[in-house]
Length: 113
Image (tube, rainbow, N blue to C red; front, side):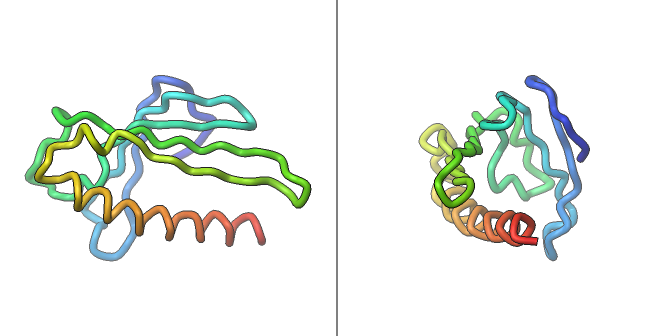
């Protein structure tokens, strides 16, 4: 995935996490307001290659950067889980919670380097 991304653009990338290599990650950019905000929609925990998730409503992921006295604060928020099909909602929420924790650690490691 290369940037810069444009609003409305669909971006894709191959997942490299062990056990999930069969997944192509896909998202649609909904906001790109440099240097403060980036947002996209996607289908969370869409890992079954036999399922077409395109009919489901996506969730919205927003990244916001804010200058602070000590540096920069990153806030990540994901909304829209209430619109997911009931049979997927709880698992998608649980898996994303752990996934975002891991991704934020990756971002911290990158920023601290």
